[in-house]
Length: 275
Ligand code: DX5
Ligand code: ZN
Image (cartoon, rainbow, N blue to C red; front, side, top):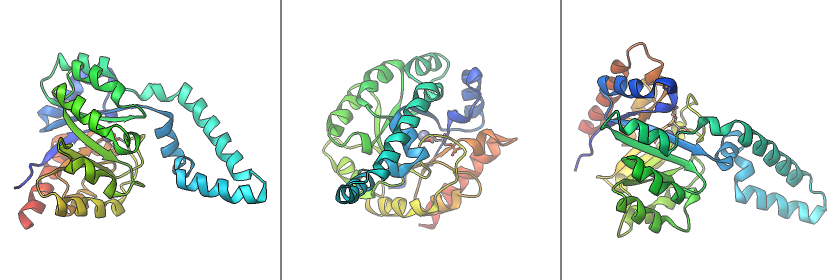
């Protein structure tokens, strides 16, 4: 079964002061979905600024090595880094947040599919508020939901939303298989093609192996790619098998967003015809 191309402009790159008119502008330009990045987390800021500092394997190896020497230099540096990040988090990160109140307000202006991408440490806390606010899709990160993904999926569905799972660049693709193969499965996998946190970063082509593996294994699954997508990178994502394309800066930064959206869609459709 062929999956449909969905182009989802990331509203993170929009003019937040005019969110309703920006969403309408994107829909008029041919957008299928509106991608809403919801982020409130020290964890994700750490991921962006220094991925090693939140990698348990790196921290454990360092701690083990330093245990034998008694010099805790590396661990001390990491703790200091965490403190700086905590400071940054307290002072700056909440400015990036789109939360349930914004979704609720936006819902009054549009019937569009609101594709919510949760970059938070406790996604379960947001299921009910977002469901009630009118979110359409609820994509949580596998890294933050190892112990409760079954419950999460069930609650997302019970609130009438479509469950999806996302994975960061450093997370092995195998981590999402159980969620796709579950009795109550996720309906989309979002492969991050940048470290989560900000728009305008450079696309990571090495993530395309994950997309290829997923497409081969699950021909009718919605596979979304997010980060650094635009005219110069879409071919790689489309030929690997991605069908849902999130694009922030490339769409909002273009003089004619409609042209970029149509180019992205054509690339996905052409790649599908070749298969
Ligand atoms: C990054 C976000 C993305 C971001 C994409 O953490 O998940 O959705 O807005 O923006 P671009 O397309 O500019 O990389
Ligand atoms: Zn996103």
